[in-house]
Length: 457
Image (cartoon, rainbow, N blue to C red):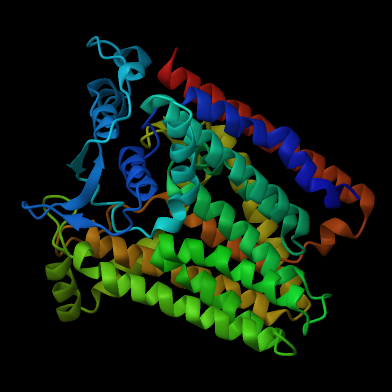
């Protein structure tokens, strides 16, 4: 069946967009890529913990070459003005290719990425280490890391679609969103988190047929949890995705090594919690003027209705706007796709979610449906964390919520879906799959044109 070959269709029709985007998207034009590259450099030098300078700014010592590169005025001008094209990079006679690696370091303010766990940057850091050792300059090392991230994300996505047994077609669609591909084509940790979540879910829910007392089963299940923990370490609200599948193993895989996997997973969960405790002092320092996390927490304590009136309302009533961002508002949120692209992606996702949930309800797959509830909790906690860290004290809205944060959450929702209605008849399956692949391929082409138009035309 064509349904069982979706991974090949994704690699052939969708994955090439990642490579092209990595090449044509100018450096630091993915949100916070300045800070992500600084964090990558820090991890590559074995600096995993955040630091604070004498001015109480969170960041850490970073290679001087990286600091010079991210401070090139043209990169910042492009990011802050959607009328400026790539020729601004060299407009002040500054050539990125002339910036070389050396052993000097300076403190860099990357307060929004410094507290992140290192696992989401291991791939990028390996790219920097390899490229430096073969004599590349800083900008070439940046692109080398981008391509290495792209390769790993493509590899993880291929195997995730290949082995997944539940909402396989919806996973194909989610991993084809222009926003997903855009993150795959960057040094941001978000691409790694998305790909790790997809593969982790696929592995944990797949291997029922292995002898549960065998070590192969143990290591497969544990590898799935480790992949899910990458997302939990990277963005703590995703810990609910991890916990859902941890207890899935306890409930449905108790025999043999299932309990051992669960206990190992609890240890990993404890490490996630410990990391959050360790870095909590750094997250209390305001990220920018006008916010005060400590005062905001006190405000919430004294006004508990805010959790419903503001945070919950933002999670529910802003779902349509967040969905658009999840589908793809690229660049520094200044590259809109065509209206027809958003329409078809929304149509595909809504139809597949509704039909899949109904089919699961008919089959009484209640634990699968519970994943939707856990997804909503994750979304609520993301909104709450951003209300605390990114929003001015007492505001009646939540700042900083972006659609890309929803992608791992939607991957969790795929487990709630039954796609038997697609698989039951081969001819119907082929028709649906061909239509979906064609639409996502067309959307990919459209998004690529939007990137070229934004930066080059």
